[in-house]
Image 1 (tube, rainbow, N blue to C red):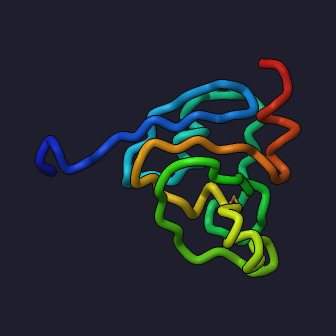
Image 2: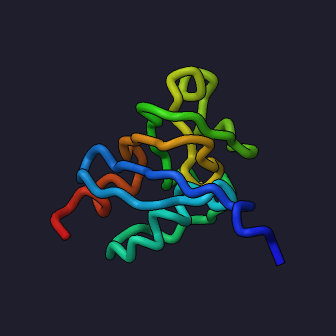
Length: 109
Ligand code: FES
């Protein structure tokens, strides 16, 4: 059993909709978003290969796993555009949806 303080939870704000969710440091930003139970969040590959979950990190610290260069260019990376399925929060995060999810995340609930 893990000690109680093993997981840190951070607050994630989706700038486009004003929604917030808690995301632990062991989950990806996409997993946390899916837990919101919003309809229409596409079930992509969840391993950095399809590019559907692209977001821009407007504020906050994070750690990234491997992301396909086909979806995240060096320029994207410099501008903090990342794949939500490959990013774990290291602080509170404010993000904007920029990829294929935008239509579904930003439509009225
Ligand atoms: S879900 Fe496919 S790249 Fe994130």
